[in-house]
Amino acid sequence: MNDDDKKRMDDYYGQECFKSLPYKLNIGFFRWDWSPVYRRIRSFLRPYSVLDDGGGFGALRPYCVGMDYTNLDPSIGMLNIDAGQNDTKVLGVGENLPFTDELFDNVVSCAVLRFVTEEQKYLREAYRVLKHGGVLVLVNATNDYPYNLTRHPFLFWVPLIYNYQKKHHGDETRWKENLMSGEDIVAMIKSTGFSVKHTEHVTRHLPWLWIFKPDSRFLWTLARLFMRKKDGQYLLVICNKP
Image (tube, rainbow, N blue to C red; front, side, top):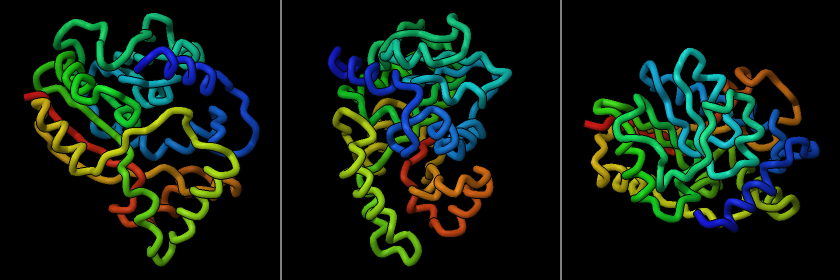
């Protein structure tokens, strides 16, 4: 990740009080929107220590209460938003982690791999800092969403909303994503030396349903009634370091 990318992150995410529309990312909306994914991540974590590798403003932190949580991010703007103690926040990049070998029981990479320019190096560094038997939880977008929903009997409208938001409100991000297929993601993880134990699709809340402001658990239940697992926006991969 180069300096221009870091500056764009600071400029974009440093704005805590965005207006009402989603994908301009006000912090409260982001936490609510990702809450189903974070709960699922937490269910796979082992006790003790966790590195949030590219953790942004520490949205995963509330789900790691009782654990030794460390948030690493390349953006000082993002880390400044994180309300955690300073000694739990580290400025750095996943391709060159500033930690000793075999330090963490868990490494979490949530929606980060798509922005990494050296994916193999990023994964090798995660492998290096994990203890033997440690868990890597990696969540990443795949290149078939949302267009695989165009013929879905209930969710055909999701690509339409996706394209409308992209056209009228800009991309969610301000840098290019490197999206891969789920099969390529798993193959890359295995080539690094990880043992893949489990994969599944997970999803954030469905576009535009946020305007009704329902309880997040109710909305998650509603989404699951309509969505098949293969329709999830993100592939979740659970790995172990042998």
